[in-house]
Each structure stands twice: as C-alpha cells, then as structure tokens.
Image (cartoon, rainbow, N blue to C red; front, side, top):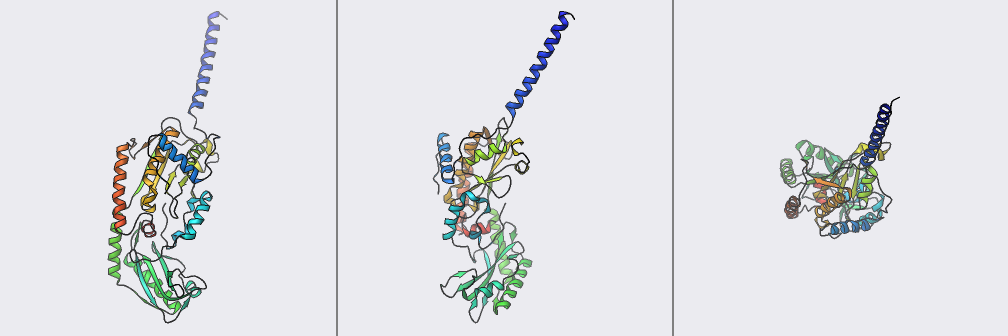
Length: 371
C-alpha cells in the first residue's frame, strides 16, 4: 500500500471522526434545557418575592401583593381546583370568611315562591331538581332564614319563612332564551309544588329582553389575554419549564399541561401558564422539547386590586430573561413595551366600565357573568 493511500485512509478516518464529534456536540448543545438542582421557593409568598426581585433587576417596578368554569351560585365554596395542594392553607383561611354569591336581580331572573308556613331546609333540599342547570345557565334556590333573616342556600336543620328560585340571565354561552326560560318555569313549579308553595314569575319577554341587553354588555366588555413565550434558540424540557415557572410562584394546575399563579382571593387563579398537553402526558416528559409556552389572564375573573396585568407583564419578562425566550404576539412578532402600555391603558377603561355596572372584575357577580 502506497503512502498516498495510507494518507487518504488516515484523512478519511479523521474526517469521519470529526463528523461524529461535531454531530455529538451539536446534539448535546441543542438538546432541551434541563432543570437544575437549585432550590425552588416553598410557598407562593416567597415565590412572589422572587418575581418582584426579578422585575426589579430588569428595570421594572415591582408590584405589591395585593377553561373556563361553568357558572354556579356557590362559586366560593368550590374555589378553583387549579389552586392545588400548595395553596390549601391560604384557601381554607379565605373560604372561612368568604360569602357565597347568591341570587341577584342584576344578573338573575328571580321567581318568588309564596309559602303559608315555615319550610325546613331538609324539605327544601329534598325538593331540589336533579340538576342545577337550565340549558347552559345556572339554576338556584334560596330561602329566607327564619332565625337570622338572611337569604341563603337551604341548609339541613334550618327553617325558612320565604323561598325564591332564580336562573342566570347570561354567561359566556350567551343570553337566556325563551326555551331556557320555559325550562326554568317548569323546574321552579316542580320545586314549589314539592314544598307546598306558589311561584310568581316575571314576564318572560321582559326578562329575555333584559338577558339580551346584559349579554350584549358582557360581550363588549369581556377580555381574555395571552402572551406567547418562544425559545430564541435551544428548546426547553418540561421540567425546565416547570422549574422556571415555579420560581415565580406558579403551581401545577388540575389539567395536564397547565400551571397557575394563585390569587390571594378565592376564585379563579391570577394567571395561567399553558404548554403542550402531549408533552405533559408523555412516558418520559424530559425527552420532549418545548419551544413555546403561553401566559393567560382571564380579566373579568381576577380582582383589579390584584394588579393582574402588571403581574402578567412581570412574569412574561422574568420568564423570557431566565429561559432565553422572547414574548410574541399572535403574528409571531415581539411585543414592545409601548404595546404593553396600550393594553394596560385599555384594561383600566374596561375595569371602570365593569365597576360602573356593579360587575367588577373578580366580584362574585362578575365571575358568574363571565364564566
């Protein structure tokens, strides 16, 4: 074998080795980012402190801590399953003092049920219909407690001097229509017959017209915001996303592929963070590669005093900085600070309109209407 052949063989082997090494290095360099072993804040309060510190480091002013759910009249007792175990202590404290949102003529059609004598809570509960829904709307019953004089959902062992039934006039599924109103009449009449009462119904056409007007207002003043965070270069593993979000106070949601930032009040979470559900359900989630995650805010569900949009901006900025990502709009273009300021200004006007209508964001009535 000539020296030329030997040289070519050596050169070919070196070239092949170089290709293998380069491929291995590229695969290592481009593999999804993995979580580190650094500690994660153990509570929402300490995690919020990390979020505020991150915002300060990036030149933003830290703010002080201050899928929709089907409507129901006892939202406060249900809270949100998304809060998870990490916020049970705070949730229990808030629930103990929270007042359940009852029937209100502002958003409900109410039919009084005339009774001749006191009705026990046990009898009222036994007379309840099998489902507390009328079409896509919530149906509820309240009694006037003979001891404390308060309207409440019937409770065992209590006695009531008056009863009333109600159905919600509008939600995100639309306005109460004539068919739903007729179903409301049937359910109310059956309840009244069971407790020995006589219902008094408001005029159907008037209530349907009120429902349409309320639905028009709600449609014009609803807002659900989302920011998409896209990786600049290297993709993220599921664990890396979860660890990065947990440092800002996010906890696991009740749905795979979702995390939430708990609110300090009972109700919907402050913010949501959504990523690929299939990645969350994969046999080995750490082998998946995520290139986008989405921050979301259901504006009417969160109280204004919680400063949800500034908190959303801070979270997006903090995640983009720590994860080497960029915040983009629906067209894939980076969102600049001026656009953020414009959104914030429009939201303040929206909050004002909801306040004027007594349907403030995060209030019991507001959460029911925008659900």
